[in-house]
Length: 161
Image (tube, rainbow, N blue to C red):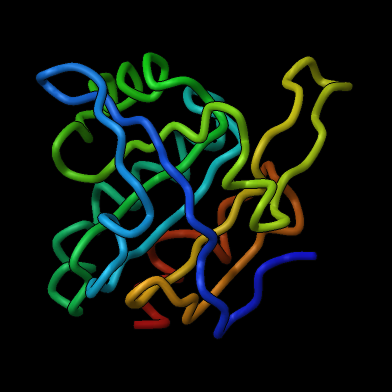
């Protein structure tokens, strides 16, 4: 079952690359007492994720923060090395959190996993965005087609705020 608006996020621990190496960041540290925009992608460095989805959140970062958002995070079922390389390559390091849900445990707990084995990718996350306040989902927008980033885009999130 997919998580719904009004529900609390499940507890999880992500890995994130920093200048000092990998760190673990839990959902409580990320969300407690904060308003956080989260977006998830099927894979770092994949075309739609890299060319369409991520750039909007980097471009509109300041506008999102100006609307009262405390933090922005992107989640993908990739390892922290890949997410760290994506953060560096995209210019997003230290601007947003690049969180590795390496075993898809968070994604599965949300009910937002999909099997892309036919395309050689294995279990991945659906493309979505959500607004989370103090660990509770306030909005959730899931793309019907993983190759599109429209309802989960930064522009759409700005309109919701």
